[in-house]
Amino acid sequence: NAGVTQTPKFQVLKTGQSMTLQCAQDMNHEYMSWYRQDPGMGLRLIHYSVGAGITDQGEVPNGYNVSRSTTEDFPLRLLSAAPSQTSVYFCASSISGTRFYEQYFGPGTRLTVT
Amino acid sequence: SQQGEEDPQALSIQEGENATMNCSYKTSINNLQWYRQNSGRGLVHLILIRSNEREKHSGRLRVTLDTSKKSSSLLITASRAADTASYFCATVEEHGTNAGKSTFGDGTTLTVKP
Image 1 (cartoon, rainbow over the protein chains, first blue to last red):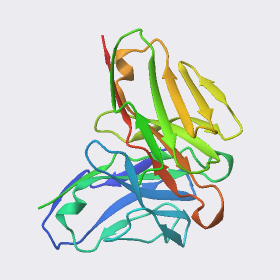
Image 2: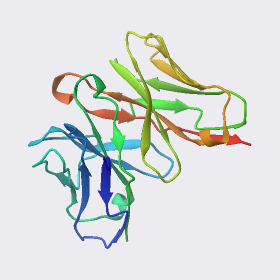
Image 3: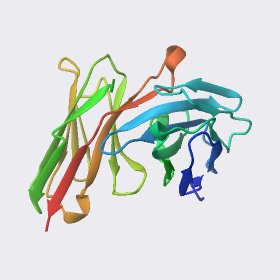
């Protein structure tokens, strides 16, 4: 199993540009989520999904869209990039049930918005 | 605001010493987890403790939970240089409309000197 994969690893955007961060998992996990991590801080939840076709907002959803058309994929779209969105973005997944809380994280995407 | 807040923010010890990190949270929880993050990497799940548990062990890790004080601690015994990392506590909503919503603290950065 590849686990949770994220692409790209690094990205530089200009203010106002849009892009999609890709996240995929091959563990058949129902739960997937997106976080951002700013320097010296913990993770803040952007959006999450408890299954295909179901998404919900986290703590900091503004400026981001998600969709979950398949169990495997959970892309994060930046609609109009702003310098405040400069951060490291992590995708995570977990199985439901008793191991619901053991999240597996991808390696992250480091995004810079100029 | 973060559900979990770690203390101290940074900790530096010698190899072989024990390291203790604390996490305080604000609302009632069903579970609390600890994660580890090596520099530049994603988070790795270490251990979960449920609200009806007071202590849990996993190898050199010992986690305690005091629901009356809304706090948890992570003890790493006989530390090694390889334990150098940031450690985060996290909670996940289990039920209701926010089921699956995770909240992370800001983390404790541990440095273990050889």
